[in-house]
Every structure is written in structure tokens, then in C-alpha cells.
Image (tube, rainbow, N blue to C red; front, side, top):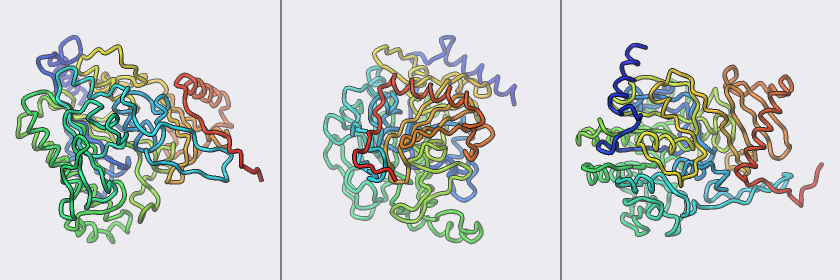
Length: 464
């Protein structure tokens, strides 16, 4: 296996050249596929025995699977902003999902003030690659602002097909382009399939030139509305698996998997797979409680779910595939975070843009040598809000195997060793006070460095 992998690295080097990146004559396409609220444990290639995901599993077999990849935030809008800009949500002050406004009058703190859009002044991956000769397409869920100045067309995308009205429904929705309605469903076209149609359309339009496709599915975010024809298999097997999965949720994931398969098929039909980087990931952890219906998924052994800075809320699947460039059927234990994507793509494309300030670090070397442990350094989370999923204001930092969680309401510090305790059951803060203080100081300094927005004292709080 090691000899085969060394051969893959040599092939990579011969293709990319000694500089370590792609020459201008062979600019690779980028297809970045983002699921919505897909949990770390929801895919077959990550060990799920219930959900059928053959196309995503095949992508993992033909590429590199990360076992310790993280979103930059436990909710969607901030994590999407981090992917596109390489900046941490705390620096952007875009720290909650766009419509988030939950408070707890009984809490000693109020949620932090925050920016409810991605400012047009921020530079996105789409803007950078477009300046370097790429066509850019955005399909699906945007959730970073609805004004003309914050829409995809103003953030670097030539082509956009955005979910607008009824974004939580999979029927009876609208799609806009440049802010104008181009499609309105009346209960006949399943949303996940429609988004795939647009993705295929974009590929066909741009097959003769380098392109970036950002395909942001809304699935499997609630409401849980599956295609009827997908349900029989999951109902038939419900008793066999002792009811340990949600058939509606599983069917929605399968429809998304079908879409991934169609995208890959279209790339193959146009002879583009050799020169296309395909990425699949999720914006945050899965939903592990009942919200707008039955509980979608079970994230065990991870703790908690979407809206929490524990592993269930931030650990996500991540697959990188590039035919003949990245080794096949390999995985890495190196940890990475959503802010790292932009830096990595700039390395892959040999693009230098000193005007772009980045909080992420490139994991280009991990793509070439996934078996070697890289020194990523510390990664951080900052969620100064009350989530719709019972999450409380909190922050976290991971350095090596250790992760510290800080609860903003009480100041309590929790320390976990993730290599021994992936479920975050054993708080080691009392046992290792020096390590706890080291990480707490690191987190405090980082917050100051990025000028993080913090929760505010609740003037009406009455201590019992």
C-alpha cells in the first residue's frame, strides 16, 4: 500500500511540476459540493449501515477521506462564509445563521451583536479564480445576504441559481438568477433534483474553459420532505435495523447522492474528470433532536449535534477527489477546518494574492501525503449565540489531541483528549490544570486577535 501511495505522490509531482502547483496551461476545474446539516456519521463511507450513498462512497474510494475535518461554526451561514473567504466567522462577526435571533431571558448573557450578511467588501474564492480566468457558478443555498450587493452575482459568481422563496420546502419553491425568478415550482420538481439540473447545465456551458462550481444543496436540512419513490427501501428495512434511522432523512440523502452521481457522470461525459478537483463536505454537524418534525439523525459516538461546539456540531465528512492526482481509497487523520479550503485551493492553483487576508492554513501537503501528520496548529470555534438546537453560547479550541470548551454563560472550562475520548465524556480540566490554562489563554488571545464579538451581560438577569 505504501509503495502504491509513493507512486501516486510521484505521479502528482510529475503532473504539478517542481513548483508544487498547477501550470496556467492546465488549470483544473473545481467542483465544491456542500451538503446542508449532513452529519459526520450519515454516509456509508463513514460507516453508516442504513443510508444508501453509493456515489459519494465511490468518490471516497477514488480519493481522500478526512476523518477529522471540521466546519468553522456549528451553524450554516458562518461556516459558508469561512469556506468562501478563508476568514474565521469571528473575524467577520458573521457568527450565526442569517435568521438567528434566539435569546434566553433567564441567562446571565445576551447573544453577541453580529453581522447578518457577508459584506461585499470581502474577497471570495469565486472572485479570486475569476480574476485568474475561471468561469464561476453558484447553485443552491446561499444564505449570506439577500441584497443585490451581497448576492452571489456581487460576490464573484457569473452564473447563479439560488433557492429563494420557501427554502425549507422541497416543493413549492422558487429559484432566482441575478435576483430575478427563473423557476417557480408548484409541487412537481423535487428541489434536490432541480439543483442538480442547474449544476449539469453549468458544466455543459463551461466545459471548454476552467470553471469553479459551488453546488450548495439544501438537503438534508429540515423540513424532511423526501421523494415518495425513495421511501419503500427504508420502510422495508426499518424493522431490520430496529428503527435506528429516519426513513425520510435517509431518502433525502439518497436523492442528494443521486445528484452527486449525475455531476460526476457529466464530468466524465465531457472528459473533464482528469482535470477536475471534486470536493464533498457539509456545512456543519447533523441535527440530532426533533425540530420541525422527528429527529433526523444519530451522531453517536460524537457528543451533541448542530448548534453546539462539541464534536457532533462541528465534525463533518470531507472528501477530496482528483483523478490520477490524489491517491485512491486513502484517508487521513490530519485535522482541518473550513477556513482552510481557500488557502488550499490557492496553493493548488499556484495563485498568489497578497491582498487576501486568510485565517486558514493550506492543507495542500496533506493531499500529497495524507499518511504523514502535519502540524496544523490550533483551530478555533466561537459561537456567542443561543441556537435553535439547544446550543448555548460557547467557544472551543483544539491543539493536537486536546480540545478545550469554554461556556460563555458561566466561564466554565472543559478539557477533553479526543484521541482517547471522541465522545467528550471525561472532562480533564481538574486533572490537567496547566493544559487547561494553556488552551484557555490561547483561546483568549485568539479572540482578541480577531476582535471577536462577545455575548453581553443581561441587565435583567436575576441570580437565584
